[in-house]
Image (cartoon, rainbow, N blue to C red; front, side, top):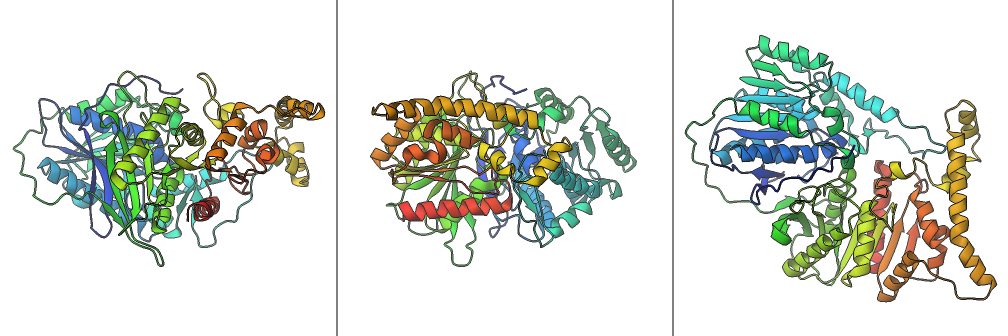
Length: 605
């Protein structure tokens, strides 16, 4: 079930992008200032879960912060060190300690901005665990709201490892080398041996001090066994603890952010619980200090230092994005590289790829811009329209607004658009309409044409790999053994292959008929659009993994290996092996990084 409910327009000034924390390791976040007739002297800090779970709850966190602000609470959302838009990397040492220190910096920042010393911490899953751990270390937390907290870090690490191992059996899954340094890749994110060890060491039932004066524990499911034990543990240590119910956790935490449903009733219940006490004591004067508008990223050996600037822009200041650029002077003869949204993910991209790629390219001298179109991430939907829309052609105007912003603020006149899946669809249509686009990189394209009512996710379209994957698998005797054991859906695969064969015949027959008759071949709309882009000099690169079902869509419009575009030097197709639809393995992300770098250095040196 997808949450398509129109949302009420939030206040324009509600969310202010901020940079805070240690100057050498700055953090990024959003401060939601108090709104409404009454203000409360309680600052609320929202602590993210990790990895793909943070992507799933992003929209829920934003709605909670907006509701808190409307009821008079100052709320702060932020990214830990090495996550999201903050500085650092998941490869850095001391991750758990850095995450706890990040919560401490966010708590101090929120209290200073609110002019209070009264603090509430909120978190989901491991974010709840980190919030509780930070509260125990601080000793000054007024309210704690853990939602489906990880009570035992050891059990959670086992759960993460099980998630990595439990994957759908496919006819020919790509084989990738396992890390040899003790690190583990889980749902597209890397966890070092040290990080997993430190995570496993956390145990909320082992804390003997009082973590907060009040606590509202929200369960993961109806059984609520772990949460019930935690409530009793908190009560025994002097906390006024309460167990919530009917939270809507499952719908909120779906793997695909597009399919998540915001549990508005639960969010209202959280705000009501916080509002049970007045928290209206005399506010302190916030300290006077200079505002930090940019986030500096330390340079790696042989690279240029990078600075990032968050900006709101567009009609009614609805849109949000982050410029990433090299320190010092910028070459304005190069195009700016714009990273578009992928499905319902916000601007950091799946597996944090947009952040990593933006900083890598900026360190090589390119200006990059990652941003959210209206209704996704931090960009607000127009009044009366629903958020979380993808494959929307009216989003082309948002991309054009982003290009205009960079033209006005950075004197850039040419652009390269990079989009994955639904982002590739948006890049394709923007490039077709706007002459400022000099290049496009379309990753894992699933649709060039789309109409209301069509499927919007690959799993809805067809839960199968590319045709060439199955043809390749026929030569693997292990696949036949798995088929005999019932592990491979032979009937389903046969059906989809027959369907694809018919589609291929339908697309190739006009070409063959025209050739036999000596007539000029008729071009379909997609092929014609690519040829017109080539005539304009647009450098188009399509990248689709060997196993991705989108290859069959490309074949439908452009022929096998895009042969209808052969001879056009402005067009290229690359098919890397060992990757999935979102390039979730670290190895495939490195391959993709190399492809992007080579593309830019070749066409826009």
